[in-house]
Length: 292
Image (cartoon, rainbow, N blue to C red; front, side, top):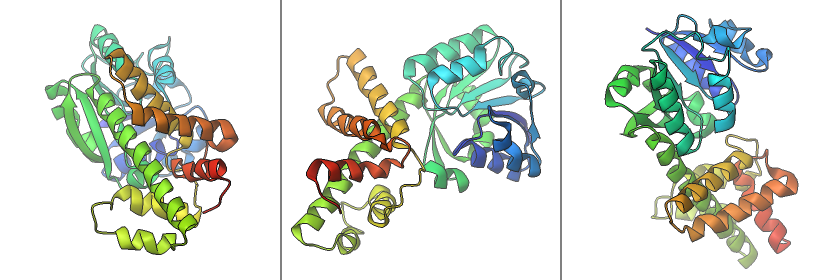
């Protein structure tokens, strides 16, 4: 069993840290709002009042924060999360951040004698709770091998390539998720407008080529109007926008992603940014002056 520091106990981070505790790892946690870590304390975690304490006497430090800028600040500032890490300790950034930032973080860690993995996740709150997250990892094979047991307590880790490749895989994941949510939403709206029962339509598509976890899980959310966030629309928009920006740096044009990105931007601008990303149906309803 390992000793692990964990930074960020929000919607995703809390159940991820809980799963590390469940398999017997010793876990130290820090969160900007300490009360959000109380349930972890009750489960046996050590809650740190000061950020630098979370990196003391740990072998692994996991970061699960909202974006690249926040991760950089929390990890690398004076008295930051890595300031007390011992050489050869491993930093694992599981946040969705730009590829370029992950590469820079890897270099910063290397300069300090630390190992680094970027390991963003997919599966939402349910996947985090069930320890069934898809974990896309970038970094050195030896570092991944040493961290694989830790990551496996939270889901299914796959090494995709070198530093930054985990984040690259997550960008591809988010593009596919976003465009599929948009297509499922349009399909259910079309069925409803044309007189079909959208609930029965979802049942009819089950098991066919159009079936998917998005149709089943997010389609159900759309039909029941359950937009309590597993993954927020604001985060989805951030990730698609990052993917498009990175594609442009490679001189790639992604027209479908750009169209869906505009829909999510409009959704966030309309005040729905904190809803689940399946709430995109609301933006399509506004555009068409309809309700599903």
